[in-house]
Amino acid sequence: MNKTVTGGATQWKAYCEAGRARAEALGNRGPMRFDENGKLTQDILDAYHRAGFYVFIGVLSPAEVAELAADFDRVLDNAPVARGSSTDKHGRPVKFPGYYSLSSDEYEGDDSEEGSAAVDAAMVGLVAHPLMIMDSALRVYGHPQILKMVESINGPDFIPFHESVFHKAAGEGLPTPWHQDGRTHWTEDGESLEQPDGSGKTHGFNLSVSWSNCTVENCVWVVPGSHRRWYLAGGGEFPAITERLENAVPMLLAPGDCGMVNRSSLHGAYPNKSSERRVTMVLGFHKRSSAIGIETTNVHAFKLPGKVKPIKYSEDYVLHRTRMIPLAIDARRQQYPDEVPYDYKGSYLGEGVWNEQARVEISQEGDEYWQRDITL
Ligand SMILES: O=C(O)CCC(=O)C(=O)O
Ligand SMILES: [Fe+2]
Image (tube, rainbow, N blue to C red; front, side):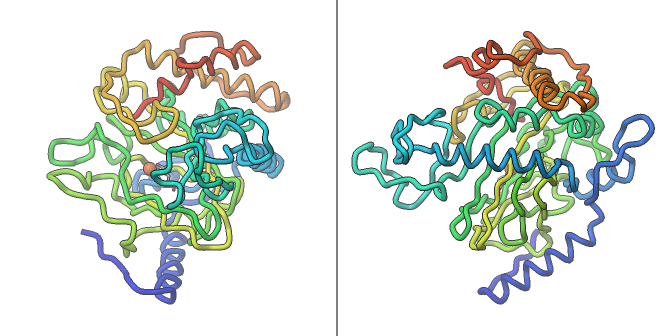
């Protein structure tokens, strides 16, 4: 299957440089470009469907990047001081307890409040459901260019998936194991139901919106073309992240760039041992027709990843969750009155006006908007 490259620091450097050269040669990066019908240009669509990922450069303005970074650093600063703690290191209440994925060796298995290891920001590996936690993230979710791009991939009737912020701290960022996210739309033999041109049922995509430098050392790597076949078919397995796949390509992003990965692609991240942290917000969308009536195991509709529940997606479930799209568009309109907002044509339930009442409604304990996240 995949050939791997092994060795110490020198070989790792060489692997990274070879990966960078493959990334530059792949022809799947550049600014978002649209044709006269407002659709992504065909060369971009072709490159995305061929490689299974695409890098859009310069999507967010430096001002918006700065706002996201500052907002996220406030969230990090308010992380619980220790596992299970309801206060942060400054003694303030944690505004969103339970939404921080905290990881370290000392930390694992230590569930007690007393005697638990202190948490520092570097131990926060993920913050779940940022639309509720960061207004800047909600505004990105309503970004007109991003949504126009999404319409080109999924058609106008697109619906939400799930959102989170990945934080790979400098020097100690944990790896993301090699995996394919899509679990529903494969044949028995592991062939992709998604057609080479993107038609048919799809698993959607993850869009990594970056407000940091995603370098060869800390970024997500993708195996080009791997979205056509499921590694788990016929009792198969994903490679371990200790395996440096010879054909993998780093998804290099500068602050303000967005990397779109087909959820059927094999992707992962090596441990971040570099001096630069990586922060990326992952958001995504599905075709409504790929979700309604589908039975699967949901792994996203929880405060934090790690749980599973069987589910069949009803129209009502999807209509409720889809309200987050017009809400985000409206939140963005209020902050950027000179921008032409995206005109969402899909159906949803509830008011599409962003205000304090909407904020209360989407964060109602036990009925938060993310309780209807859509795993495919
Ligand atoms: O950012 C990462 O390291 C992993 C992201 C990922 O797996 C995804 O977006 O599906
Ligand atoms: Fe993934």
